[in-house]
Length: 194
Ligand SMILES: C[S@@+](CC[C@H](N)C(=O)[O-])C[C@H]1O[C@@H](n2cnc3c(N)ncnc32)[C@H](O)[C@@H]1O
Image (cartoon, rainbow, N blue to C red; front, side, top):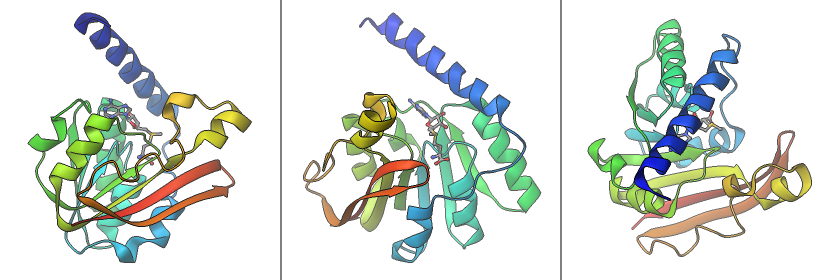
């Protein structure tokens, strides 16, 4: 794909996310249950929320004392995040950026990174390892391939079985689990940076 076509594809994905957020009601979804159950495994300090959307997880973590930065390419998601932050009297530093190779490095380094309902590219997964401080925690969860097979969710967004294990040898696996809830089939990971 040419550079120009890649740019156009990105613009149209971005616009489709903007449209989704525009159509959402003015209420925030509950924070992710896999994250909530593992909050105490996170290091005190800073958290980067990769593809943070309108901030349900970022705001939950800010409420629990973390210093949270969120990145997402949807302007509309970040507009909603600003609205909910103000309404809840919480602060999340938000950056509008597209997750291309190297993009995260401009945002800083963090004690924790979370990735919820998003599949990072191999390049972004590598960048996450770069921006995580030593001893820092990476928590990831998203739909797995069963969601594609059983519910026709697009395969390219699904985590393949054990997909992120052993990919970055700086990351020690603390937990890998496949699970199901009312929304579907998920894989969840917790890593610690060595
Ligand atoms: C399913 S939502 C999840 C949002 C949030 N993590 C949550 O759990 O509510 C996926 C998010 O990824 C963002 N996104 C998709 N592709 C992206 C990209 N290339 N760069 C930055 N953000 C992206 C979308 O704008 C959207 O907010």
